[in-house]
Image 1: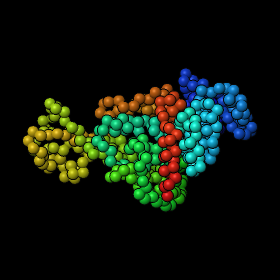
Image 2 (image 1 turned 90 degrees about the vertical axis):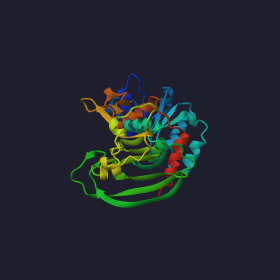
Image 3 (image 1 turned 30 degrees about the horizontal axis):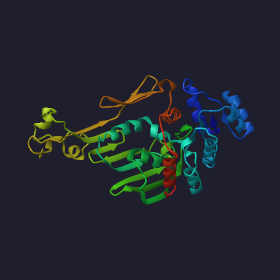
Image 4 (image 1 turned 30 degrees about the vertical axis):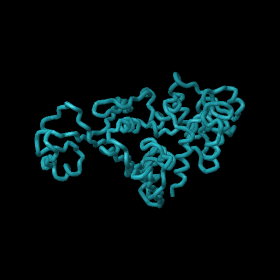
Length: 362
């Protein structure tokens, strides 16, 4: 059952409708009789204004996708009635709501849907990072999504945020050409004012994150989003991983990599090799003491004939597979399907902590 009838509520409805073998849609609860009547006719579904009627349906899961101002109150209301709840973000907009949700005795019945965690490329990236492919994670530059979404993604990649401190935070207006909106793309846009926020976070001593976001990034043809992480053994720059791989005992490398005193840089994205050429780099490691192979490669995206994403691989290894291929889901819908299916978890405590921190940004 879905509480709410806005565009976010219909994200959930589309996913539920596309997966009848997994889900059975019972009803949508809205406040307005007019809205209930219109949506019922348009979509051929049960839409009601009666909370009691919805309770009698005994749903296994209540999706709360109401407005930000009352989403916390609504989620607690349904969890208090004994139902399992999946609520939309954010987990509150002010300290009163944060405190109420954190101290709610039935908060364990509530999960928060953060679809960005389940984006295919982020799942593939995380799988490689969890293997310590670039070593210990030190610093991050994150410019992809806003506020509480952004903080949740910093947690997703960099880990616990309990000791985080804001070093600096600034917001300012700037003008950029409007090239798109939720409705699509435009070739007749004007300069439009957007807000940009740059915040530096200290996760702990000598570990930092730069959060950099402006609203134009969601719908633009001329400004990129970026995620980069520096580790002790390499770097992730969007889809590319450049890293030092420890050579296994007895491993035989290509002779040209280890024999030539003129060639010992296999890192294709290296600044030095790009600037002066691989062949001019002298190998000064002790004879027979090669410990690392320097490597660089990108995630590879595999599509079917309908341009639906089938899988993501790295160096021939499959890291992510689309479980909803026949549905034609976009990234958000894949994320929502994972939360509805119970494949993903994002607790109230984490969601409140992330929203509370985002509220402190300038």
